[in-house]
Length: 207
Image 1: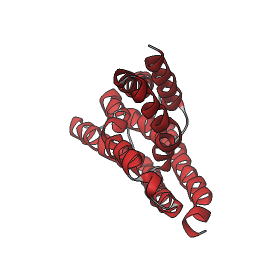
Image 2 (image 1 turned 135 degrees about the vertical axis):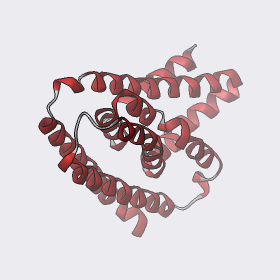
Image 3 (image 1 turned 60 degrees about the horizontal axis):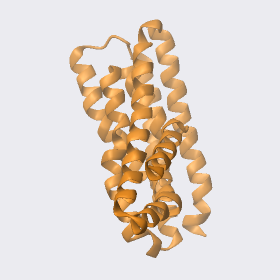
């Protein structure tokens, strides 16, 4: 039970923490409704398969520069996503054609999963916190390790999905003009996040 509560606590905190993935979840919910937002919220279930296995098997044996290069690649992609969001805001509408909404929903999961995969935060979290905790719980009782991981992902996906539903439910309160401004702000936040990542990890990559 302690392992479940610990996983739920860590997952809920990660789920509502500001970052590129949270911005994408909110943006997807505004653009494509709650299905797109919920799909984006599910990105960790897809991307973290590689993150978890890579962390537990390889990351501790790789040089620090590998993390730096991963972070810089993530910064480039996050910046590109932010610029694309700002460009799309020029003629964005809250009432797109059904086909357009389906396209947004289909793209949301892949885009969010790639952002999460290239972001250093999941890797760092697993390398420094979740990895050691999971291994420790597993050694005490395998069911405890499994419970911690399950609790974490239930909470992180659930909290982001709930935010997506709440944001999508408030779409009718916005005008197209306000919606476009929100998209511009969201895009600018993604670009800012990319700059922060690049500044933080540039010395690691080239140090």
